[in-house]
Image (cartoon, rainbow, N blue to C red):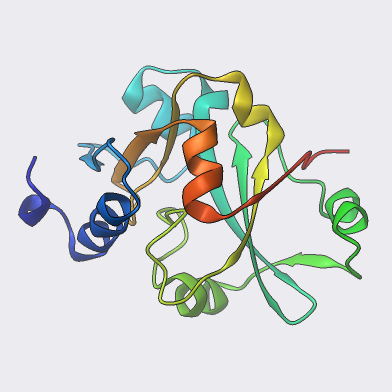
Length: 160
């Protein structure tokens, strides 16, 4: 698929990937990949290989957590690890304002401005990781090391 065949938000992500030297390309799926389970089914991979992009609000600013699709973020434990007072789920409006994307399709890059990012250390267990490509129907393949590099993310455990 060429970049011009992608939805507008996914073209922004594809451009950001190219500028970052990422070789994997954004793929348009026929079915929704809004959840990790949907994405894993569509891609025929393990749910743990899906890098969920979850936006939280932390001390007055956005915090993007890229977590393995096989578990949930323990916000209290992560706040302690990061030395923050609290971490709360961002509103749909905060997600759109911070990333330019809607919930269910938030890519790890291609945002209007940089967003502090945490990358789940368990994603390192997989040779290939799949992340959202800007819409609920787009994804791209990457590696753990590449994901950390292109996001400038800090690697942490995100569960208790």
